[in-house]
Every structure is written in C-alpha cells, then in structure tokens.
Length: 473
Image 1 (cartoon, rainbow, N blue to C red):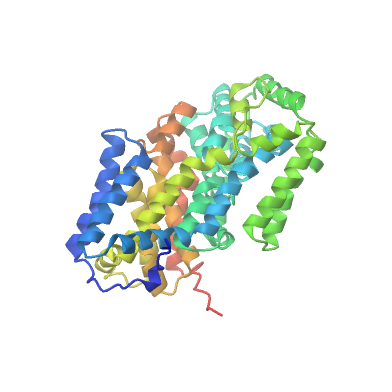
Image 2: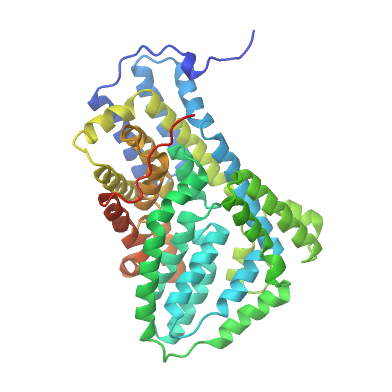
C-alpha cells in the first residue's frame, strides 16, 4: 500500500461552482474571523489562519469535494510558491551574515556622517531608504536609525510628526523594494511572478514617487538650515560602531555589491543571495575576526551586537533563519487557504461579481489598491491583505493580459504602503510606539506612502508601466 496521492490536475472536479452568496459567506467569514480574532480577542494570527482553513475547508466539503481533493488544492497552493519559500529561508541568513560582516554597521556609520541641518530631512529620507533596502526591514530601520533621527530632529527643533513621516517614508521604500524584504517576496510569491520582475515593475511607479518626495523634503528642510545639529550624540554612535567593527567600506560593502551585481545580471535570487552569504561569512571570519562557529550559528539565530547602545545592538542582532519562521509559517498556511479558495471557485465567483463593471486596466489597478487598503483596515495586517488580494485579483489580471508583476505591484501599493498609516495595524502601532508620535500625526507627512498609490493610478490611466504578459515559449 502506498501513500501517493493524485495531483490536483488528476482529481476529478465535477462539483458545480458556489453561488455568489456561498462565496460571499465563505470569504466574508474569513475576514470576520481574522478581524474579530485580532482586535477583539488578540488571538494568534497563526491560530486564526488554522480556523480559517477549517472554515473554508468545510465550505469546500459542502460543495461536494472530498478531503483528498481539498488537500490537493492546499498542496497546489503551496507547491507553486516553493521557489519563493526557498528565498524566504535565505533572507534571514543574508541579514545575519551582513550584520556579522560589518556591512550594515558601515552603512550606518557612513550615513550618519552625511547629516547637515539644512539637508536633514532629505538626507534622513535617503539614509532610511538605503538602510531599509540593505536590511529588508522597515521595522528594523525605524527602530534603529529612525530612533536616532527622531532624537536629532527633536534636538534641532524640527516638528516630530514631520521627522516621523520622513522616517516611515524611507523605511517603507526598502520594505517595498528590497529583494530581502518579506513583503516584497510575499507579494511576488502570492501573485505568481519572479522576484526581480516584481521589483522591476515597482520601479516604474516607486522611483518617480521617490524623486517627488525627495524634492519636497529638501524644500521643507531648508527652513531649518540654521538649526544646530547634536554632534555629540552622532559621535557617540559612530565611535561605538568603530570600536566594534572594522569599517573599511571597500571590504565590508562587498557582499551587498555582489548581491545587487548578480541581481542586475539576472542570476536567480537564490544564487545571488547564497553567494553574498558566503562572501559575508568570509569577511566576518577573515576580516572582522568573528569566531567561525558563532558566525555560522548566526545563520540560524543571530545574537545582539556589542556596541553598548541598545537600539543599535538590537538592529545588529537581527536576522537568521529562525527570525523568518513567523512570516514563513503564516505564508504557508495562507497559501494553503488561498489554494482552496481559488480551486473550489470561491474567489472566481466573487471576482466576476465584483469586477464585472471594470473594463479598463487603470480601474482594475485602482480597485486592487483600494482593496489592499480595505484589507489593512479590516484585518490590521499587511501579510494577509497581500496574500488574499493576490488570490482575489489574479484571474482578472490574466484576463486583461496584464503581467502578474503588475498585480504584485498594485497589491503592495495598496497593502505594504498603507499599513503604516493606520493606527490599529501592527505597523502603525509599532511606528507610533517606537518613534513616540501618534500614527495620525505623522501619516500626512509619510509622503512616499501617501503619494505612491496616486502616482501608480495616474500612470495606469496614462498607460505607463502596464506590463503585458510574456508569451509562453
């Protein structure tokens, strides 16, 4: 007797599709379950995803599908995302190895030297953007360089909501674009597109927005040009970094250069990340003098830095495969959920009803962005919003011959960008608590987050950046 099961394509699918009301109750129940569980009962998101799986599975069973068929749907949803799951595992190791090689410490050390009073807002925005691209985390950027900048801005007499908005804008830039960001990979994986195709699609709308925001922060910052910069605090941080690391950028920045160089050459993300990890380990051991076993163990679970400054030590202790477990496990469960919703027909029935009146690609993109915002408002979490909206709109983009990268880009612009602007989301509460500025106070100054969706919709109306599906060879 064997335990082999037929693939989804081999399973007989003879059950009729659900009615609109069946699909609405099924999908609405998922949203209600997650929303009430998070906000009313403060339950674990993973536990709520398990209950959502049971709920959707029962609805699929009610349509006549067997357990074997339902499990096949779950398997199919996960299997298609395996390449992205491999990347998720590598992300944590990239971050940890960059910490030990001194790559992140060098970026922070050099960046602090760029600050001048008149250019504080513009330079801070660029510095947060670079840090978030290098680390792949908006939270880590906000909790380290963001905390430093909020203190400097306060000492200079710049309104704190303005400083906080600048920090959130820069931190979100990398969280949206970095190849080692969890949301970047999650969106690409959920939409079924290549990671670098996804990043390339986002550049169409994000770079123009970045330039606009940089100009605005530059103009706003000039009025504070006569204010005093707290050099003592900056000197303390730079001295602590210099005492803990050797900071020759020609050496310590090589892993980052290698990763981006291989990415530009269109090597697979797994290859570029693996090569950068190995080079960073070699630098950590051979140049920084780290113990080889400690450096290797950090690839699983990193340990805090030893600079003596708590916020900096916390940043330098980020990374490791273990650090990705929360997002990775949530993604696997959500992909299984999406597999049932998709293959049992729930999403397609809802989609046909929802977008029947949408005839233009620009309207579809606007609807996707609005749906991402609505998902954040309802569920308080960008991860679920990204996954469910990719599942919901995937067929609509295919029918309009739009590349899946346009879907992943639009979902990020509706979900990743707006989550930090909502007071009750995990990102909104984290930013407010870390920076000491209420979410609604800084939201209007988080210009990248606010303007990017409008830039995207405007470009779609003009027909710019509407990538078409590549023909299958």
